[in-house]
Length: 72
Image (tube, rainbow, N blue to C red; front, side):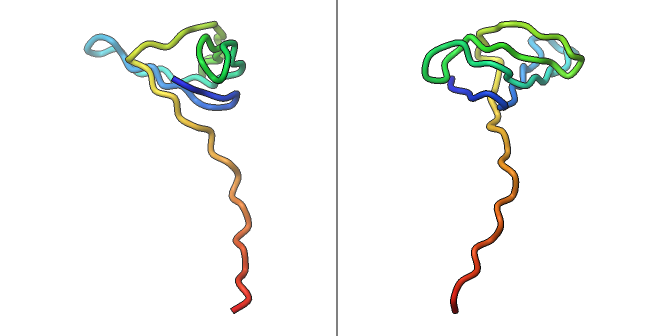
């Protein structure tokens, strides 16, 4: 698993009825984008975690870049 500061992490529920949790990666503490990560959940709670197989990293979306105008 690789991540960068600003990416988002989704932790899927492990049991029926347990909701997904979303967090922002605020610090990558491992080398070369590897865990552990310091994350901030949507409720403001921060923790250090090494996500397991029930987690997915979503790359942060870059702001829209202006389109290049062609000379044609």
